[in-house]
Length: 421
Image 1: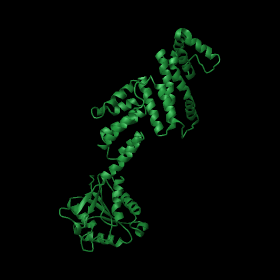
Image 2: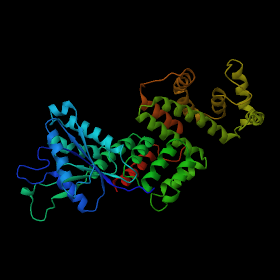
Image 3: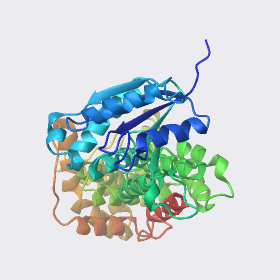
């Protein structure tokens, strides 16, 4: 069975329905004639009325039944709340009743049907209510109509004309998305975008790229912009390609930028996790510059044999001596943080500043472990700028990019540009 698409008209009833004092047809009748003359299929007319306009609603229905053009229309009269009857000028109450009427109408809609709002009947609050609902996104497939007073029409003006509040809705959506972007909440921005009419391939691709990149899903980020070559700045493809390659200095810089985002949003749990990961990977990277770092347990014996030979055996002697008084020093299996730092310190004094900064943030790492293992959290942090300064000193001489130029800020600028066009 083929469904016939059509419209349902929703309107408040005013004192000038079905006729004004001048015997001119009111806005409801005028709108219905206009839509029918356009060839619109009207499935139903839903009229919301207060106690004081109940008779107007009945008169409007009777007038429609007496008119050949309108007699075939199905009319539904719905009384509003007692509160709105008591105060029909209350915008909040009018919006609530308009929403209740819209929900009833939406339960009657078939795929492809449209809601036509009459925004020219009732009190000013009632006339505004439908525009508010459309701007807030409650009626995606709808049209708001205005009906002019024929006594006040100017030459060239149509009596019935559409009002489009989509631009206002889009502005609301744009502001919400911009706030999500400012907070680096790309998942939230994506959800807002999906519920709006602002989505473009460029914007969707950039947001997915940002979401994946922030989550260290570099393959997903690369996939998100594959089809956008020539449409977006080519730096994003170049940067993600380097991150996908596993280039350690680049990944360490990315972890630092990610820590800055977490600190911006006061997400201290993630911040501590990034700090822990940076210091851990810096030690591994520096060691791997000296000797191959073990990638499996089978490689650990070779690692320790190589350690024993560093500096003509002086590093091995240093470790053996320290192990006699420090039980934290491990000379087998995977090297722990204490052993890693001791190897680097015994090898050359050039790592002294890095090791000093690592020691300063070890308390943070201990806090991170406690939060993870004991399900504890933290809601505030003292001297976060000092921690970032320590991270920069640790990464100095390792990373090849400026740590003051966060790529996510440049990325946000391009996303905002895509959102504005």
